[in-house]
Length: 434
Image (cartoon, rainbow, N blue to C red):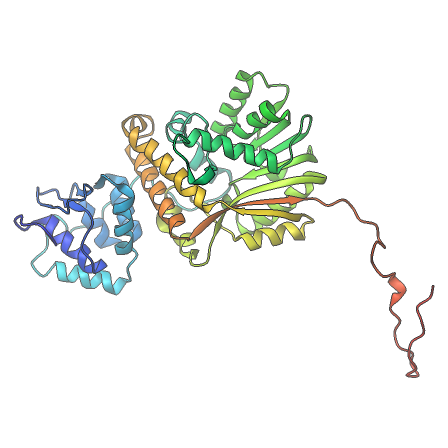
């Protein structure tokens, strides 16, 4: 604990945190009773009411901290990511360490208002569910809100930053570069038919039609996305070239297409759903056509993300990350051939930072649009995601496949009669028949 102020709630909380992380705090604390502890870093954990601590006592760990932040009992001023990074080592600490630190903090007597009955969960908290309901929970927040966060490109997936992001190369340019990379990897040419599974707000379809002359069909389970994507297509004068449908990608029946894109949608699928997705990719592309699956994948040591209570109770109730090896194996089993794999994890960090900067810079307007709790969820979601990718817990992969042309039965293979079972009298088998 640092500072010379008179003892108060901020000092007690700081002592608890420092004991739990076994290191000085890199941020200051300001509590509801006016007490402060400062580090000079410019970042501050604000404890607005005693409920901020009470939630942690009743639900120690990530979920209690998340509930406090989402409900507005606590807040973070300054560098959100830096504070969450150090707090993450506290809420993720083993229970005996947390209990020991809490008991040590109570030796001087309980802080007034902290002890009491449990506090109701924030209204933004949900139970875990899948399918269209989970997709709409995440994406049907409001088109204007997404414009504030994503920028005018309305692309909600990892951007492509040449050379790590050179000066003057912002989010809009990086997203345009990503759309170009996807179109080139798919080998799009004028007149080709592109299917975009989980098409979002239609940005890839519009880019492919404008710059590569491709026709396109997009499907999504989000009503808001389908409505706005269709309006963008109409405004661009491409209604005869691009179509957007409210439909499950596994229910598409008007293929096959010359190329198929699936951009950051597999993390919404269960294990059986990913098998169905791989089968759909193979079924919906013509022989010789290409498939690009842009996937969020869990990396070794990142399995804890699958159990993260904040992610599952707030932004992503259907979160299910697969591995790149499993994805490639499923595609191969359904008849696709892997052509190329590119790891984009280093590109996701600047993408997430840009989205978070957009949200922080437009927080007041965002709160007017969707309310305080939704904005708090997104602030914490983007910060936690950035830390997960920085720590190597998750990655992003561009997996490019092709559906091979049928091969003749006897090309470079032995004839079925090429093997002869030994004769019953023990004599060696004769030559195979010609």
